[in-house]
Image (cartoon, rainbow, N blue to C red; front, side):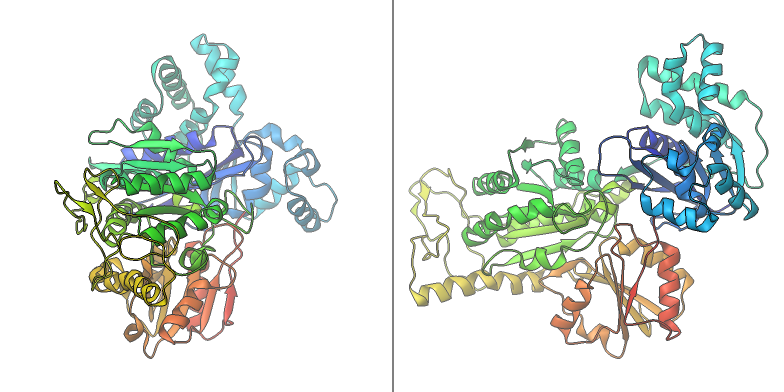
Length: 616
């Protein structure tokens, strides 16, 4: 078995994330490369959530529509996900849920209830009926009474039932791995990473007890894959946080908002990392977050703020101020479903145009999009360096899918980059007033941080002359506007092409994408003929790619309704995008639906706009 997907589903707050982390760490300890995908509801407790762990013999970061092994920790998981278990796949479930009907699942969406009721021809089908239909379709059910097992093991260990049931997620993981014929030792090592003290001791004893029980043989097994040390497992939000530390971040602000909060809270918890010297401040709102970060940057500290769409909206005026006073600022934008509150915990790429154009007036900004977890780490460093090199705003685009997905990668890939090019003026004994906004061929003026002894200049949100005095003189206005905007052309010339885009493969059909479609597309290429992929990292200033598009049938693949990347490509290259493959239901594009869509395009059987609709 070279490719395997394990899914666990249950109520939000029910320990499913811990279960998935344990499973991923256990198989990772056995030499498998893992990637995890987390889909969770935006309420705090109770609503349905699930996580996928996909493993392979080589690094993986795309996900499949069908799963090989489903662990249902409640009845709702059985109702929602049985249709996504492949033929011959396994369902591990608590048999007591079969006593329930759909109307006894209070959190199950009405649409799902209505769809299943129509399929089974009755108003309130039971979970037993639903399971029977999928067994006939080839799903193998394995009843496993989690709570009864916990009580029995607790009695063996002399542990109260309530305490033993706190290890239900460990029981589910141990049962899954035991059924798959996987050895116990890697799971015990994973538990040691997850827990401490008496909690660790209890969970290890529970896992050992599960492994002592007899289980049926499955037609497929999960063996060790030759463990190699030196791998790390990170989520996208963690990678971005560590990248900022590697890039010299000194000051980070945030106001809590999903899914961006994960990055800042991770920074808060790891400010004691060797070499880290960063202050993290939770502010009263996003306006305070962006202006506080600007203030820190003007004093000479590498500063950033992290937010999601609604918060980014509130930051627009502050970012304009940073553009006017030429403050080096990084805004890390985790895209989620909009507009308004929208889908707080679901993915989207709907903020591309807003990142480029958001705010009134014009000022130079750079927009950099990360495609995977390693990119998030490296790009966070580049964003900080570019903000200081070009003394302007850099918007670092990620999305919810990347933020909450995890992946194991070789440790040596996470390199601290040597990036420089800052244009700071050196303090002098009698520095005095200086022309902070002086004319320059590259648009970049010498910068002296506020507080430099003996040096000062005027700073205002109004238009100004080179010293900073307010002016409405048309000649001075033209000079300052042109000076600032020259930074974009300078950046386009200086930023290495590999940081602007990568042509992974050429083809008669050329797909363009940005952000987290990268992993799906790179794996999709293995299943496609005559299809190439051009991945864009620098979205603004837009790279010069027109020569790569000549004579191609152009396709964009993106997570939004309208095809914003397609509009940008057509605007900047004057090349027609023939097909827009889009998905906007909040779920990431799977490998299978991407391959199916591109094969249809290759055969000439696809419309100009092809909407992907998979996902639960």
